[in-house]
Image 1 (cartoon, rainbow, N blue to C red):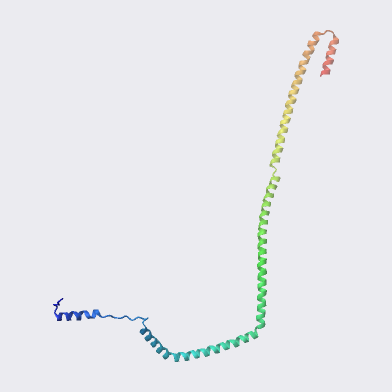
Image 2: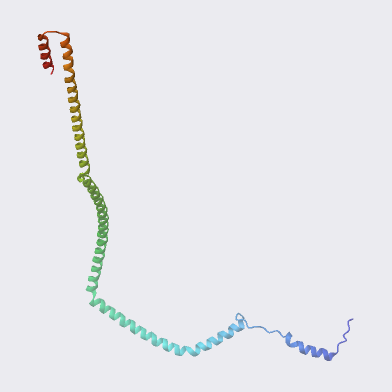
Length: 209
């Protein structure tokens, strides 16, 4: 068997020192039914104390709201009676406004299409104008005609020079032939004798000329 050799007085002191640390404290839990019951009783007491004053104020506010609603209903009936024809006119004008807005939307789309078409036509017109200006400038440009005229003049001048040269050459050839024929006549006269032969030669020479 185990035997204890500790002094009882020391043991008592140790127990007194440790006992406070061994106490278990249970925390308060809101879900615990005792706490819930206690809170409910407190809320009930508060409600019973505050309810009479709050009920009186709520009754007063209810009476005031009922009177205000009644006055609003009477004013609304009066307004409906007095302005019923104006409301009818307003509804008619609203319908007319909707119709006009629809027409405006449709016409606006038509105008937009016409504007697009006008823009395209203006672009085509600008292109045609540019082409016409180019063609008119080409037609009115007399530079090629002037060049052709100058070329014709030059050709005519060259032709005249050639004609002159041909005439000079022809004249030179004719003079050469004329110089050559008297020599041939002298040779023929040496071959033939008598004055008749000279006359025949001169007549033939005249005929050849």
